Image (cartoon, rainbow, N blue to C red; front, side):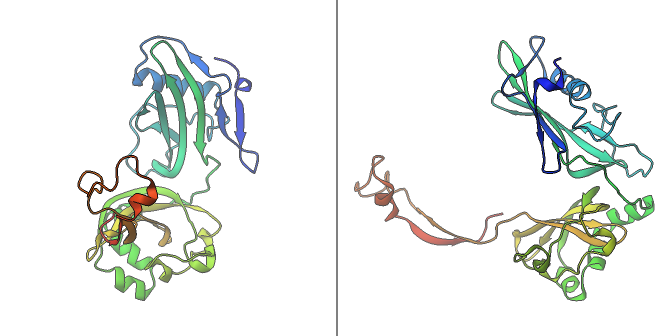
Length: 293
């Protein structure tokens, strides 16, 4: 393989390398009939040979093809693990998830992108999500087990009284431990309006402020009265108990201008495929859609 300097290094504002681009001169991969398994091996070898600037630490790629850990282990070394081969047309992506203490780090990992054609295969680029050093306070395995077993209890303990009362009957599913960054989520902190009901969250504890990482439990929280219309992905820190991030998973009700019937095939003949947008717009109706998830 060619030296790293054959590709363009992509850096962030701090000067850290976040990607290597070979778009100007794609790296050709030797071999014919490459399979997802062989591309995975090529990607891992490429990262180990030329992409070490993207990797969090030496040795982190060891065992990258082995099954990812599923249990929190404060003594586990930092590793990357292959998760799933992704394909879109002739672009193949080999993604590796970053693991710390046996847990996946939310939003962090590596990805190598290939262009696969009948007669040749090239590496186009490699990217990473974050990837800097992590300072994660350890917690006891018993605390993680208890949090996974009773995530709602953990969540309600991290909320103020009023918000806890509102969320008490919501449904929880898809619980799993992870490591994630604590993110601001109050309007006063981020300078924007926060979706109900999360404007009632207390501020982050001081030891989690400033974007610190923490061991957390991730799960989906759904309002039983509204189903998919009010659904969030929540990550709650184990010790101390604090809501670290909230991601809306539904758009709620929206107002849309649309056709409730096809004005071309079922209309009066006044419009056709050649009609302009303005001619078609007069047949639209403005409706409020309340079932988009």
